[in-house]
Amino acid sequence: MMKAKEILTAAMALTAIVLFCNASCKREKNTIEVIEVNAVGPKFNADSAFAYCHAQCAFGPRTMNSKEHDLCEAWIAEKFRSLGCTVELQKAALTGYDGTMLRATNIIAHHHPERQRHILLCAHWDSRPWADNDPDSTNWRTPVLAANDGASGVAVMLEVARVLQETDSLNVGVDFICFDAEDWGVPQWSSNSTPDSWALGSQYWATHQQQTDYVTNFGILLDMVGGQGAQFYKEGASQQLAPRVVERVWNAAHAAGYSGYFPMNTGNYITDDHIPVNEKAGIPTADIIPHYPQCEASSFGPTWHTINDDMNHIDKSTLEAVGQTILQVLFTE
Image 1 (tube, one colour):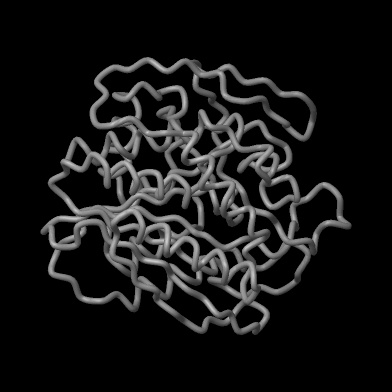
Image 2: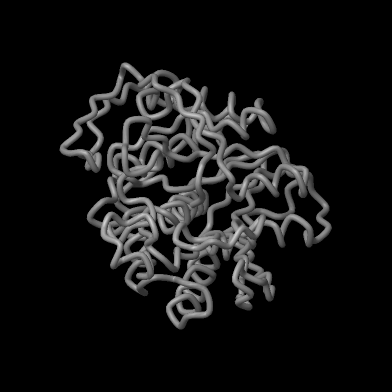
């Protein structure tokens, strides 16, 4: 995940109970009360999503051009196929900020492609090659396992696909896209100023879409949706580019009982995969991404781009809050 513009809000949702343990803002598991207001649709299984997250991390860091990356690609594609989706692999040779040629694959899975209206769910699946925000500078060139910053979004999408296979009564189709090469952006220790070095896979997809017989109504991006103590403020660019989608998602979260996880506050403006999806593909898309306004290490939370982004810091309650919100959106279409 990329740096945010330094536009921060100071307000915290009053419904959250947040424990700060030290200056690095290590946070406890979410203890936010969940009250179902007008929940619809089937139940999201957080245990299953957690297992999908763990399975990706078992390959190791999924950094570009690595064996671990290729093995995980095959696993994700086959898992979507086993859940009843039609899968296509969009291959691309992309150029990193430093001139490195990146063998990228956007994994695209279609649930009921024959339906006339679709909703897009997306996340990135690659790992950050460098833990350049780690408090220990000796780790800055160490790959990130990326349990939260990558694997969690894919895990939520896989669990949604599993639920739809078992209990599908939707009027719409769903497209799942796992974007590659999102996290090859310029590291903090580099003096390189290459523009648009982030979100390379989504930039490629947005300008190389295949023609379809259906209309994609809107999209939702899932980025870092499993972290301990996470809350999801309304991301700034999403509110500018896709305000109705933001309203739909946050209202769904509140209706499903997860208002504590989705406060109505505004967070940062983020450079993320939703930008090219909005601006180049023309699909209004909102970014569900955490905001930690009081975290000194990063407003993305204490594990962002550090060696501590591992399964020990994934919270099932956070996965559930996001996954159930997605199902609420889908089953109110």
